[in-house]
Image 1 (cartoon, rainbow over the protein chains, first blue to last red):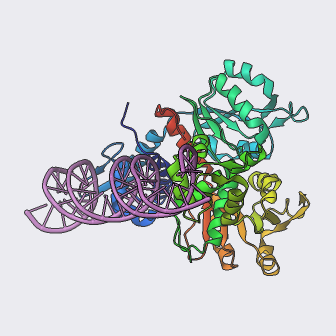
Image 2 (cartoon, protein in one colour; image 1 turned 180 degrees about the horizontal axis):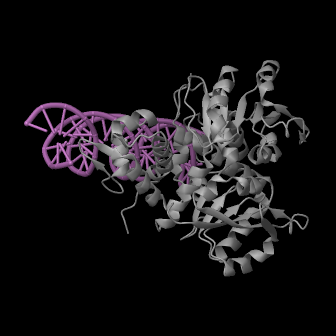
Length: 212
Length: 212
DNA sequence: TAGATTGTTAATCGATTAACAATC
DNA sequence: TAGATTGTTAATCGATTAACAATC
């Protein structure tokens, strides 16, 4: 296994990916760490350090080939594979995620959506029939699920999480505003919207100036 | 102005707030940094350091009074005030946010929702009429807006952002997958869902074990 | 009082930045 | 070749952890 890369670096990768994609779209084929640093508001040093966690993608005197680097990062992020996702909770958040087309473009495919509410179960959303959450166990045996999206109310989130893990699902994208207990081999990515909004509130009051 | 508190600390505050709220709900009235550290998977040192950025809330030999500390953090985060928000983009994400009741409980009130689509404009969502985005300027003169939620497609986000800033709105909660240029006095909080999902994909592939 | 636990200073660790030899 | 820019080592900076006197 490769040496451990810090989470700070990993969290910057999607941003590199976005900027490089924009460059390519604008017909720019090469870029130096210096020029990229100016666009991204980072230091050139940091960019080179970040990239060198994964390999030597540049060339002295030349810089980086944009397309090549973009593909390397795509590979690093695991975006050459596809992922099967299920959405747990067919409320507004679940539906919003299901309808957002960008995810499928990146290889994240929604193969199922589940709910507990009899009034929603059976209805069709974006070509997928909403299933009873009790079907998830059986469904997970017939289909390989990479990621479960937890989009249910806080009260149900923890129990659901335990079930999901017991079905062997390794990736959790958690939208519920609660802590899910870390378990070996299970990766949890939290999207705590309330926390995000509170942080914004704090910063609005603290009279902070230019930021990120 | 107080000394600058690092963003790392600020981002931990909502989590403290959540845990302390849970403690209080469970009837726990006092807690030591040591016990809290065990629950939150932090070090006791870090908790004391974090809190002491803002004041001395504990007592030697006793620990912290849960209710008192909760209120202090509430105050620090600016949750004793209320905030007026407008949602820009009445699509699924905009609607999901509008319908999520937790925000209003914390003092974040949605006072308007705007869209560009004539088919949606005029319809009513959660008791609020969807307005034409062209009304936003006039609306912002009649109402104090603390935070604009950008929930429009990438293509429109940058122009909209420039407009919003020109209307004097200082807080931006950005759900579009693009970079908004930092400006003095404007606070941007990004929720980059695609980035979050990519980070999850990376971690799923990297064979990482227990985390966060 | 004795024990517990804070607030705070000092030590450590890790991440960012600077510098520069290697080399395209 | 000369200039540019990398990859990488060393220096700096900041954040986390440890230690402990103060004190409830």
